[in-house]
Image 1 (cartoon, rainbow, N blue to C red):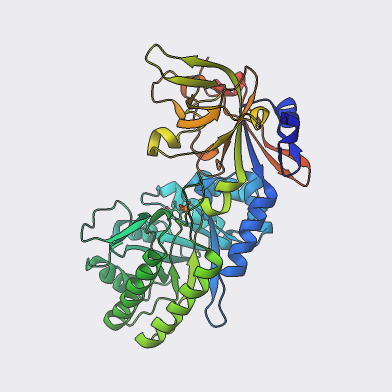
Image 2: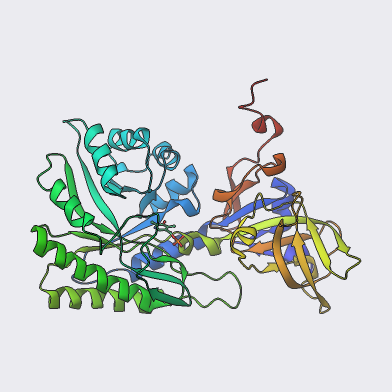
Length: 422
Ligand SMILES: *Cc1c(COP(=O)(O)O)cnc(C)c1O
């Protein structure tokens, strides 16, 4: 088998390298569309209203914002830059949720100016700032970010009494109730409900059930204490994805109906009108659609017995291994029929020993100029990329039905110094 045989959405990786060079971020557009369809299909209920919001911090460009709009999802942004990108894509502002624990005055003004649908308030001071900045002819809906005291990571979740997150307010703190009292009757700031986000790369469905139960009980408590009933419950994102074969995500087709039924029943037993249920998947929409293509320059065997594969990228385009000890799978299309494998560490060009793309992976020995593909790099790769060592950010392309489309150009040296005062 040769490299020509390895295709992504019907396009050979060799032809992609010829056309766009490496390193290259390849996004399988059909896979993103399929994920959006899965969420829309599975996250609905005969009595509850639902809404799916794409957490754009995972991967956002103008083309991506357009694709999300075409797919009918809403958008979560956390900065003026993400909002600006969405506006350039003509994304409908009313379907945008503006998050963030520390929005600047400028960002709040921008959100009001564009008439963003919802602002997610992090703390009482932010409400004060919003009240100061909002003009009499402007209005905005707000959600309040709360911590339900549940933290979930991959295989487990904990109920925690350690409420020290920098995000939102603990449901056990009286400030949430005080804030709702302050907002009550405000002429142009409208409290609509609560937002929580319990973690990421979650494989444990019970964590979401527990969070739903705790937040619904809190909604009831707030109603009893303030007379204000939340109309919206945003449960955040964090749905796990496959990075390597060890990852076994929740089957969302089975889980979502169960979760929504549970919310319906719990609301009934609490005797409250069920809120509209929102979720905010980021990585679950884009991670598995992404591939990073690198070119191998050589293999290095150290005196101490370690074997490295050197590729033409680095931690500047792939930071999650260094940042979170994240694990990835890779293929060398040229060597697919090679049975002799060895343990390699895939590393790049950056001047750091921490510049690791994949630590200890079993691969056939590549030759100079082979393509090496890292899988599941669609989320938090392009969006977290940097120019460390003045390395150039790769191009990003969409592929679908045997065709490729450039959506972000590869950076040039001129781009690197565009803001340098010369
Ligand atoms: C990061 C984040 C998400 C998305 O998380 P994923 O793990 O990518 O699904 C959603 N909501 C909020 C508030 C977040 O901070």
